[in-house]
Length: 244
Image 1 (tube, helix red, strand yellow):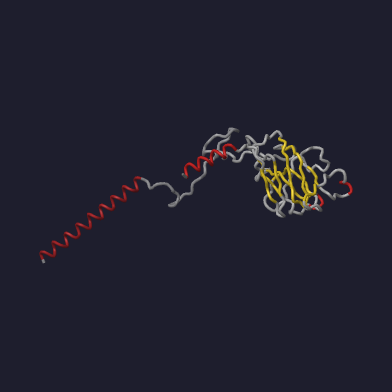
Image 2 (tube, rainbow, N blue to C red):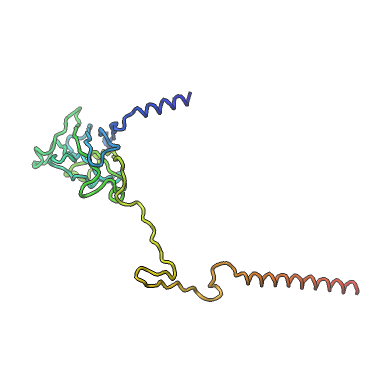
């Protein structure tokens, strides 16, 4: 029965499309959904981002940025923070922007006293400033979602982030470096100079290798001679005691 249920579960998972929407919940109950977040084309993919439950009095950016970890503002953002909404790489959502932002920021849609929105972003793996596939530039990868706008940069209450992956993701920076080859003693270098072998210390403690064969033979000979001498001495003592 358990095996049968397991097979059903595998079959159900196989029917779920790879581009299924992903959702994340924010610290104040906000909810953000991305139409796609896995297996994106590194050259560019259109992603619909929807959100609800936001504070109508706080402006936000809908962005695609480098993940800095929990409690840290995601940055830098690929394509920059687009305050005019012209590039399609980010969006500014605010129902009460500063005077210079009127007509630039898109207002929230009010639903049950909270702010909702829907925007379409064009997500690319890299731009002239950073690269989400570079483990050195983005060790935690990149995320799509929301953060407070520039009027509340330090406010983390609007951070609602969804991790993003790309197809054929390979880091442009090697994750490991080949060990440097050390010159062998006496080897000739590329400038025809000869490496001077390291001078070993002299004295009784100079050798750190195995014990020489000659030394082992001499020690064994002394051991045998000592044993013979001991046996001979004991025999002589025994003979004297018998004749006493």
